[in-house]
Figure 1: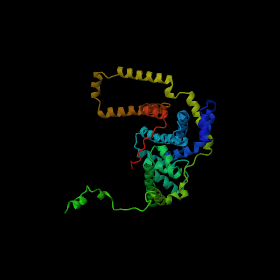
Figure 2: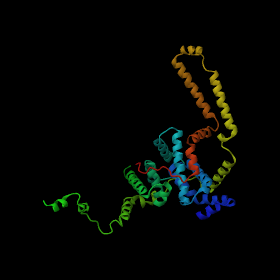
Figure 3: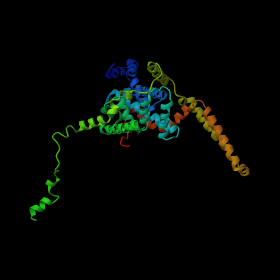
Figure 4: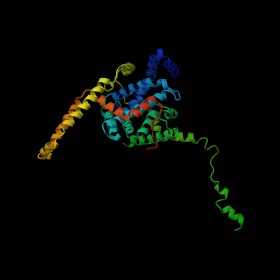
Length: 179
Length: 181
């Protein structure tokens, strides 16, 4: 089902659930992997992904189609994932560095992780990046999103995104070759 | 030096504003592309290493087969049932408990005679008593059912304005600070 059809169907109350089922089927994996790369833990990701789709369901009526549906959902997912980390930081009264240290521990010892040495090294290098560079790198490198789409998701200019990505690449290559 | 030479050497001579440098024809037309190519070349190790692009993360078996159902369940539960802290009875109990606590504290305040008695107790004894009291309170708090929901409610109260704004306007911009390297 195309995005347009999903949106049209969702606006008819008798088709709402059918349309939403299709939307979840269409986007669940992309959104899951996007959030998973931010939160590392499967359980945390599961919680946040469910929350993302609940928000999508509750707000889809107000979606004005000023952006593409997938960038809109990505935007909600990104906000939810980052807010999840910030909430954890506040709840435990720790610094964001501590939160990222916890993510690294999950990466090293958590469940549902099965990468070889170099893949793990890349993920650890990513955790050392500033939050925004890490986000841009994930979306560009792993998800192959266009800068224009990342710009819609993050509300940042394409030029600034290119600069962020370029810096991230340089830092990661350095980590991979030296560390 | 005649007047003509003076005018030529003055910074007010607009001819001086013209740069003596030249660029090849069409240089600026292809600049953006050349920068992109240079970036691609620099990141080539990463870009063309398909092994690195593979995620080390996995999901439990059949996870995506059940995700949709889990979301639907949560949606239907959320629509039918209020959260613990939103239930009217819970709210009344919380108010009643707070009032009871305030009344208890009011009627149990130490009199001046009690304070005099405390003066005879060593500081170490008082500190160890208070520490043991705190321990009991912590244990009590941990034992309270759904304490997470209560803490979430407090957190939501603190940040409710922002969360509600975002919920009703999910297209609002997230505060990304990309130049904060």
